[in-house]
Amino acid sequence: MVNFSLDGKVALVTGAAYGIGFAMAKALAEAGAKIAFNCRSQEHMDKALADYKAAGIEVKGYICDVTKEEQVKEMVADIASTLGPVDILVNNAGIIKRIPMHEMEAEEFRQVIDIDLVAPYICSKAVIPGMIEKGGGKIINICSMMSELGRETVSAYASAKGGLKMLTRNIASEYGQYNIQCNGIGPGYIATPQTAPLRERQPDGSRHPFDSFIVAKTPAERWGTPEDLMGPVVFLASEASDFVNGHILYVDGGILAYIGKQPK
Figure 1 (cartoon, helix red, strand yellow):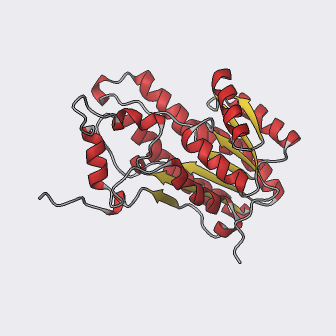
Figure 2 (cartoon, one colour):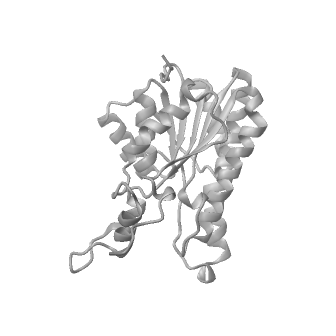
Figure 3 (cartoon, one colour):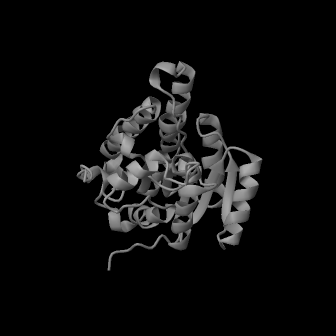
């Protein structure tokens, strides 16, 4: 039987205070892993710790800015000394800014790139030496359909997520010889606080136009949920995926495979 167990493994999930990150951390914990996570503020930390406790999950939380290399080094060192060296890294922390490109300030563009692309590089760089020493590890980068597609108002996000796809492939290429597998998960449109504005009902009770567009473009005819990512992250974190490397697994209800409904 293929081994999906994560017993004894240590997982670091960035940005796992809520939403997709929380669901993936929960899945890894339920598969047996010890969980560490980071978030940006004490307010987020307090709520996240309460939510993990309510779910029956023991976690170690860090207030850490993953764009700051020294902070990340300190966090990874503390995890190693308290839980053990990181076996599984999930680079989940990210932001999106929906601003027309010609109206976006360069500093706003850089902020998205910094959090969505540079931070995964920093975190991966921090854990790879320990993985080499231990004889292997798993790095899972949370990509996006915008790793493949462009769309209005998300020039920075698409640029970052396209770069993250290639960082995933390059880590796989460079460190596969050390039994390190680096893969990505590309969520489709997931119902989270980040996408809530796109799902708000209109004053007349009708769907938001983008909500209608996504449901029509998705063969599953629904938005995804954070729970839809739980199985894929356990697979990519476990021995079951030991010969899977440099791959982006799109969990999108089929949207990237589909041209859309024919008008009636």
